[in-house]
Amino acid sequence: MNIIVPVKQVPDLVEELEINEDGTDLDRDYLSYKLNEFDEHALEEALLLKEEHGGTVTVIAFEGEDTDKALYTAIAKGADRAVKITNDLPPGTPNHVLAKALASVLSGMEYDLILTGVQAADDRDGQLGVLLANYLDVPHVSVVSGVAPNNGAVTVQKEYAGGVMAEFEVDLPAVLGVQAARQTPRYAPVSRVRQVMRQAEIEEVEASDTEAEVGSSIRRMFKPEKGAGAQMLEGSPEEIAEQIIKILQEKGIKK
Figure: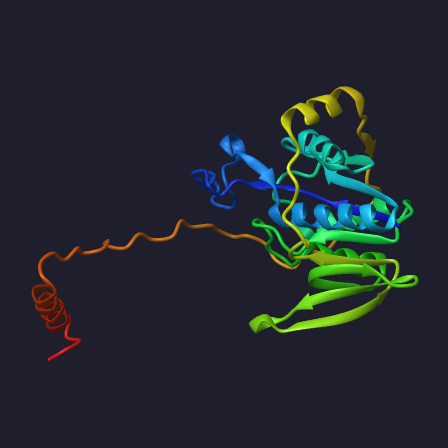
């Protein structure tokens, strides 16, 4: 089974985020990036399928901040091939455009299964997997937490709201949006990644089609307004209760 896993770098939300001067995007000059956590789960599920049933795993990503490191790390974890798309698509490019560009590349590659992360922290106009399946004209199932080959198809576990699980049989080729792999994504030691950087090669390709209608556009971004903060109450339980009653009375909530 030939499996392709598109991955992307997303802003590290642990860092302080600032809005650019135009107010239409994050100020990306000082941002730190990391691999989208759902893409990590998609890669882990692909590697598990390879180990259990054979085949190959190809990881593909758009050129950008730390893309090479992410691709080498994927090889260090067990991927067989890494491909970088070199089109000049800036960070924050809408998923409609990314999916169209990615489809133009994947249409020239052999694959049975494409595993994407179910979503990303910087998604705005839909999940990449849904859009990609549309452009490739193949079946798609999202919010997947288990995959098993089944005579030219795959059986997938899909989660609905409230923890309700469903099982589907999907004909191949197909695109699956992975929410969680069957086990925690594996760790690649730094020494192994450095070794891969010396020995492995990243293939470079150019997307032939990046023209796509975008479902939405950003007019203005704002930081969340800060509230007045919390009022800390001190004293015995009885004294705190009296203070709470007094506050409610002052706000007109309790008479």
